[in-house]
Length: 227
Image (cartoon, rainbow, N blue to C red):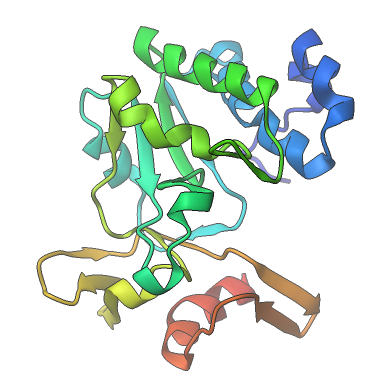
């Protein structure tokens, strides 16, 4: 009963190129491989003005429209990991995170999307090889490779276990605010990325790989787990 959702089946968008490489990928790797293909299919099939890809483990705490508006005339948006030095995995996982990406339905936006699709079909595995990793490391050079890409500057886009220490995070009235420790930037949190959150049973969830303090649990995790 998801009245605002349109469910798309694999067979709807799987073409010969995808089916040819499908046996060579694990289920997870094939999901990554399909990311640009499902975006491209959606834009063309439903004649969308733009399409935003979302990771399934993010949760919005304020309206993401502000991130779309920030792009202005640019055609593709990227969100940086913003790694804290103690958790910096940029060399392995990339500067940018495939978590919230917008592609506009124009010549430049589709050019980037088709380039990404071709690269993912060529190589997309859950390992580090020759500067590649899954579908994600391909994004690293887009800001110089293409003139239509935009790096989201809103620090509230993509608060995650790997960058929490970069910010003061607190509740102000009905919003959760993140602020740089030097007070140079402040913004409502747009979304939090619950990477590696594992449900052990109906009453227990664990954040794997990161220590989350009770303050952060009360701000983000309690609401998310209740939902």
